[in-house]
Length: 172
Image (cartoon, rainbow, N blue to C red; front, top):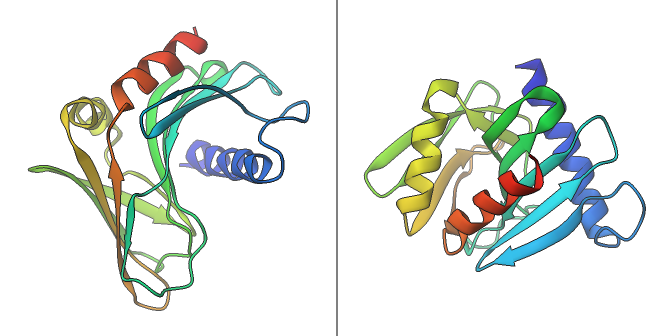
């Protein structure tokens, strides 16, 4: 779990860098390719490479809630021998002790949450999840904020297979 928390922090830094100049500065993740609704980013600033497919939700419900941007990641980190780790940044602090859910068609997955991030509770299911992402049309993430608001973010899976493959290629 500590590894995932560190990864969430790295992802947050990556997103901050994207927001202030889109990888112009040395050490910031750079956009390698865009496939449909998914971008592929790569960072070599630390030990090994970090590569990820990234997308933002197409719809967010309910309307009118003050939230930061949300992101869906599929990450590979060579220094840690991690491949296709799924994580979500929901854009608000989540209710302590709550789980989030992720649905792709009939397939459902439970995500554990910490602050603004969510990860697959059962790591052994990650390969099945990535396979479902490749075959699906969209993915729906439901979570509960610290204030008790139940939220639903829907991400398009248009381009996800090509993005996952390209991220893997970049992080060989």
